[in-house]
Image (cartoon, rainbow, N blue to C red; front, top):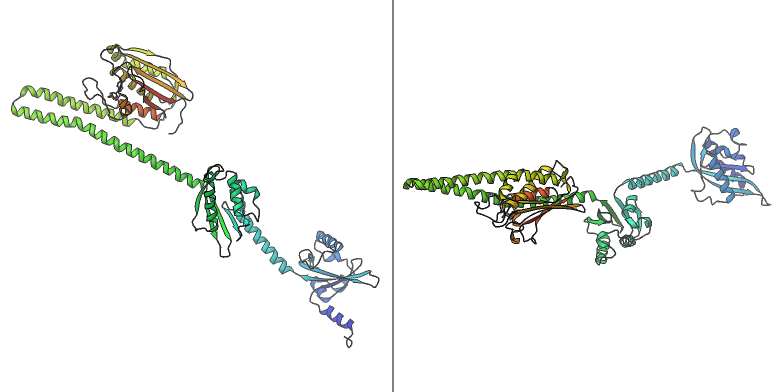
Length: 501
Ligand code: ADP
């Protein structure tokens, strides 16, 4: 030092220092600037020296912050607090990290302030880009409908998105970094978030243990759990190499509902198929009986003709004709039955009084012949298909007349009442009655308790038809087995219909 002189050394340092060095006086006026400063800011020396320090700040607010930091003695080693936006003469800007050193005289008075500005534009840009990427990631995660979270090896929550908070239900408001997976599960369980592990169910501890086990040692298979409000969630936990656990929660309610609906439909279809199988078996059996008779009588005619028994032929031919007629009746009634669709399209308000009056009109001559006394009470209104309801009443009243007692004067009573959301219609007679053992069978196709048609004619479709009509109205029909004076049928119909079945 002694050989060169300190001043020379400092001057050389100042001149060659790569970062801008600017010296301000106490009034914040630029008193000196090294070549790097002049170069960086693009000023000739005359236009720079003598200017206020404010000149190099791009933004008034930032300059105010700078003054505030200075007054507050902020630690300038921290780049975050001491980086400002600087402006060149040509208007372009750069980010600079400012570090200052005051020049103090012997009395402790501040003579000047030496400031060194390091261009940190690249760094600032990198930080900004990183921040942008992170913001973008956050926004993307929040936009995801799937719940997403990461827990560390100690099972503490590190990262999560908005959907995850929602999915946590009652634990949602308490979700914050650091909360453990077990705490979240517990809070949600205690607040009835899991229908399969409600607080008062004895199964909840086992259920919770199972959930925690799947969190701690996931088997890499997604599970589907029921959540509150009838929702279904697909739960997937994945362990990463560094011991973290990534959890994914996907709402699969719609899928699950569709699956359940499909399963219901499948079962319904299976029942219908079984019913159809049974139906076809019955139908083919009952159609075969008259056919057998026809072939039997035609063989007999053949034999009688061969044997020259002319007088027997006429009787066999009559039997043959009767069998053919019966077959026609069976086919007709079957067609009738098949045409009643389960789906009703012509809904209207129907007055049962009118329906019964119509029926008595239709069955009038038959009833007079049998000398029937009708006792008809006032009837309520229902919602339904008038044509179908007419056929229902006709079948029931027709049977009541048909199955009258040989030694009693027939009485047919029709009554009804509205009970809550339902309407009851009762048809009873003082006829031969029905053995309670057959209370269900009589409603099946071709089930007759009287095989001898010469006494009570019929094909065994009437009550099956009645049942189908009632069911298509979402109602029910039953034989009152407690009634012993004759037969009593009770029909229950909803007052107002659901339009779909
Ligand atoms: P069908 O009258 O053509 O035989 P249904 O299906 O109407 O067929 O009735 C089935 C069976 O139920 C009848 O064969 C009969 O034995 C019995 N049944 C129906 N209604 C009455 C009634 N009011 N009284 C006595 N028995 C009845």
